[in-house]
Amino acid sequence: MDPEKIMNGISKEILIALKAMAKATTPEEKLKYSEIVKNLCDSLGVFLGVLSEMAPYNDDDDGPIPF
Image 1 (tube, one colour):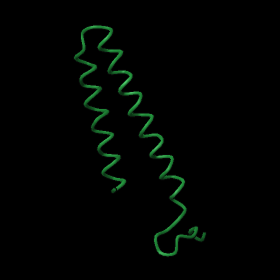
Image 2: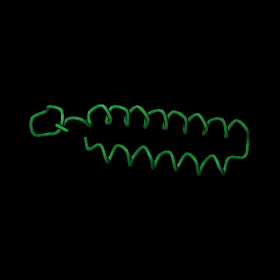
Image 3: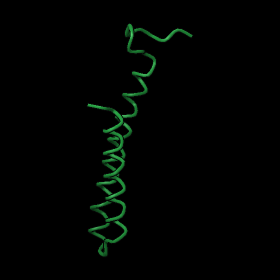
Image 4: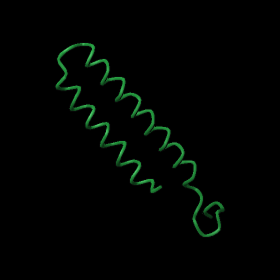
């Protein structure tokens, strides 16, 4: 799957959850949405961490990029 699509999808879900949290009226609803946002942000962080570990490699020879 395309990494850009994954990042965009998670980011959109975060924005949707934030908007829903802003409209929430009860503390329970706000807690629910804050947990959703936290989980999505954690997921995005893990995904970005994996991408940063893969960044030193190029697609041509799967070896480190020479400096």
